[in-house]
Length: 148
Image (tube, rainbow, N blue to C red):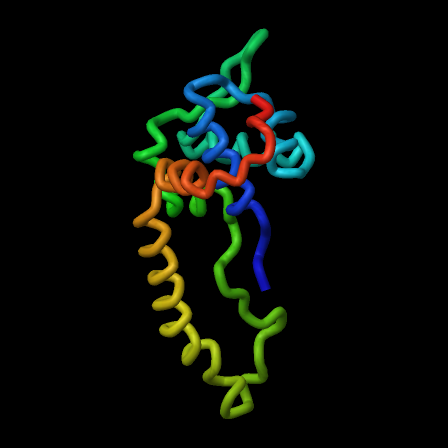
């Protein structure tokens, strides 16, 4: 069960900014591309800005821009910027400590979950926003020109 869509939409935003050739993009244009609301985009842009991945250009023709080259932004950076929950959630209430399983399950499950999280983070660290932009271009499924 996925925790949220923030990561996927944030990667979408940054990939859009990467292919905009340095042109600032409005949250409304990014929202159209991601098929979500501009409020969602602005919330994610705020998190991305706080992480130093984007910045805003104010005024007419303003919008969001990458704060550094797309090749320097790893998907792991994006994940850490927008996800604020643990990858794996534990029991909502503590298990029964008087049970052989309940009293030991949390300690038993932590090592494999930590390894799984590390493997995911290692994989995300290998891919950059520039890689995503190149893959989008390679796929080339454009039936109409970009809207920006």
